[in-house]
Amino acid sequence: GFLTAEEKGLVNGLWGKVNVDEVGGEALGRLLVVYPWTQRFFESFGDLSSADAIMSNAKVKAHGKKVLNSFSDGLKNIDDLKGAFAKLSELHCDKLHVDPENFRLLGNVLVCVLAHHFGHDFNPQVQAAFQKVVAGVANALAHKYH
Amino acid sequence: MVHFTAEEKAAVVSLWAKVNVELVGGEVLGRLLVVYPWTQRFFDNFGNLSSESAIMGNPKVKAHGKKVLTSFGNAVKHMDDLKDTFAELSELHCDKMHVDPENFKLLGNMILIVLATHFSKEFTPQVQAAWQKLTAAVANALAHRYH
Image (cartoon, rainbow over the protein chains, first blue to last red):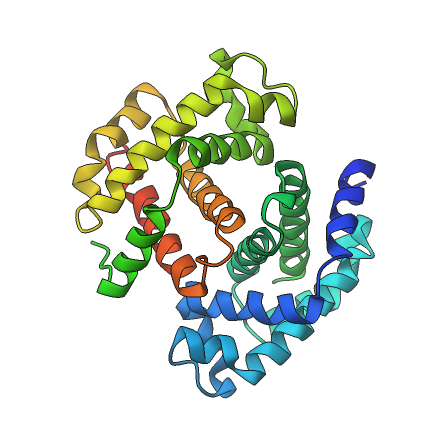
């Protein structure tokens, strides 16, 4: 399998405590703040003129929620991430034209947000398991690119 | 050359003032070795790296992590002049230590994550952005003398 039984336990244990809607909005918001060029994909979202504007933007929160719920669904199929994200991969390539590097950036931001929320509970083993997951999801999302 | 705004410099400096370099340095290097196990190859003489607890408790890892993060403190003092500040270290990492520069980005990411775990109030999006910019710039400066 993609993760060991122990890693699956660590990931599911942490994820069970995550407010997916809230963390989604925060992860997407921080992506747009920390890597400002990513704002280009969200020009229709209104005011992205400052960190505060971005973090409180209702469309950012709504879209972040959507993205992270999709990530959460993917976690249920951890041993077949490529299958789970095949359609989304095609969408991001064919319709949205998103450079797959951005999936890695979002993964990094998500790990930072989890670290921020959980503090020392986000210990090295939990971090290692999660970094494996976000890398796997990023690869799965890039898999159907052509 | 990377340009840091006054706000970005202030965000970096104010957080740095609160960092326990010894503690955070050890944790950053330890987590690098746990999360990216191939990086252990650079530290063969550090003794027991056989498990997460061995790595995180290893005194050589802690000492070297402190050394690395102390050096990073130089970056905070010379944010407008990173390439010159890290010129010698860049040559050292290339010529003597043969470290793939990709590892500097990995270490930079690790610094961000450890800061996030330690600073719940202070690690705002703006602070994260300023620190992400700094670690990326230091990684570039350390790669700059590679040949």
